[in-house]
Amino acid sequence: MLEIENLTVEVAGKEILHNVSLSVKSGYTTVLFGPNGSGKSTLLMTIMGFSGYKVRSGRILLNGEDITHLPVNERAKRGIGMMMQRPPNITGVRLKDLVRVASKGKVDIAKIAEELDMTNFLERDVNVGFSGGEIKRSEILQLTAQNPCLLLLDEPESGVDMVSIEKLGAKVRELLQGPSHCAGWRERSGKAALIITHTGQILDYVEADRGYVMCNGTVACSGNPRELLAEIRKMGYQECIRCKLNQPNLVVENVASEG
Image 1 (cartoon, rainbow, N blue to C red):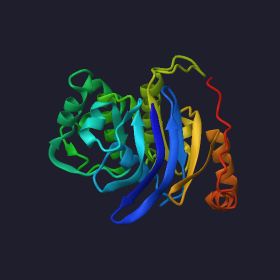
Image 2: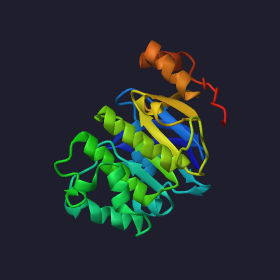
Image 3: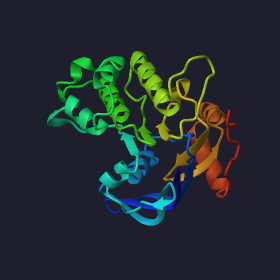
Image 4: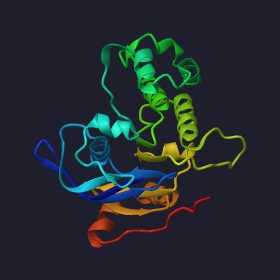
């Protein structure tokens, strides 16, 4: 569904991403690990098409179409949706109205809001006075209403308490796989996700198929996400940086099975 080919991106005159390549298959969930400041959020912002992220070289393909220079609204129309790590406050716009527009009247807003404990926030201005967990739940409410084919999630577990992360994880899993009826049940919906995580906590709730590690603005390696996370927890990101420097062409291809 998504192909990133040799992408180099500049922000405010400084090169942040260097020759980044990765892919996200339809029906699959991909996780992007990396330390703070490694360029993960810049990559998602560039995929979504936000201004200020200048592509110097490379390209972004969505279902085979080159969208590298399309505006944000055209990418959204093609099925990309994003949960931002730090979304803005939108004074004067009620959450209910934003969700209604995003859903085009195709979802039961009240039902989804109840599932996410957001019923009391529908009449409030978007994100104004919301806590960290409330902002995350607001973001996933909007994503659920939009129902995109490609989900970009930037640190969904950041600043969220245990109750909120469980609700968020369940809703993300439902978006990707449909409602679960038994332990271990999984069905590929045809949707895909690229999830940024620093801690890996989201993997407690969402089955991931592939992982990448980003360090210093480039992809250091790829492989089984849980194995990568175990190594990161054991050795830290500095070991990834050292490994990349010593073996610049290394790509670990130990991808989780399709089951």
